[in-house]
Image (tube, rainbow, N blue to C red; front, side, top):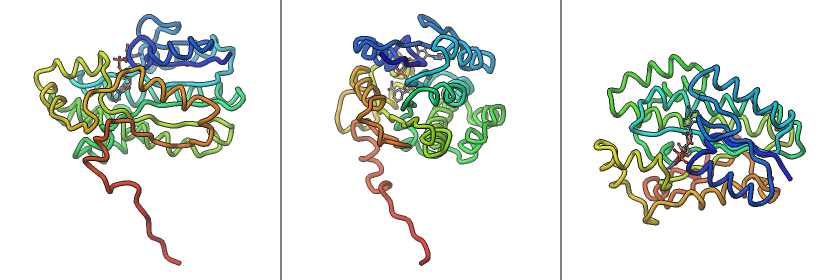
Length: 267
Ligand code: NAI
């Protein structure tokens, strides 16, 4: 039996992942605003540090895996999206990393999004502010975009930045150097309360409904949970710093040749 921590364990993909891991006989420490072993608000510094200390206490200092799935999406105000989706995720990844290093061959999965590559005009300055760990500057930049589109900007930029953060960290001494894998799953639309809230919104509903998804219907949370559980498993140990798109084809449709891409160097 292994011990996993999952943020956002009360709903959607986090809850579906929790169920699969528990059905396989593992122990899950859920972190969420409600219905979890660790009740914490990841939008605040106090909530993040209590989430880290309480999770470390409950797991006895060693964690076999971590899934950072807690998040909010449009039409929630951009400021809250920035605080939860980027700063809440990175605080858990950094804070729980030593517990992952304590376990033998641990693994972490961050839930990104295809909004990182399919939302146009994400401000580079905002992505940098996220990556520099400058929370108040990030919020200031998010608030330059008027409501309601601050949500979409904050969301796409947070997912782009957190994916880059994971790629940079994954290959370093602190992560794979300690035997801990770190990868990102980038879903497209997944039928969860987060997506439904967007669909029900007067501004975002028509945008979401009009977004092209070659595979058609949204995925289910259980479909994504299968990918997440696989990335936590020993079979996925050679995946390191990967951003895996499971998005029904939207990224390939809109940006077929953007990746893979070569690079040039002088010989
Ligand atoms: P969901 O709404 O079903 O679950 C999100 C969970 O995060 C909820 O249990 C909620 O209570 C928790 N949460 C929200 N704010 C929190 C806070 N301040 N502190 C602690 N916990 C908090 O959403 P879903 O769809 O399962 O989302 C999971 C992740 O997947 C999110 O990061 C989301 O951005 C991402 N995602 C979702 C997509 C979708 O279409 N549903 C597509 C791409 C990415």
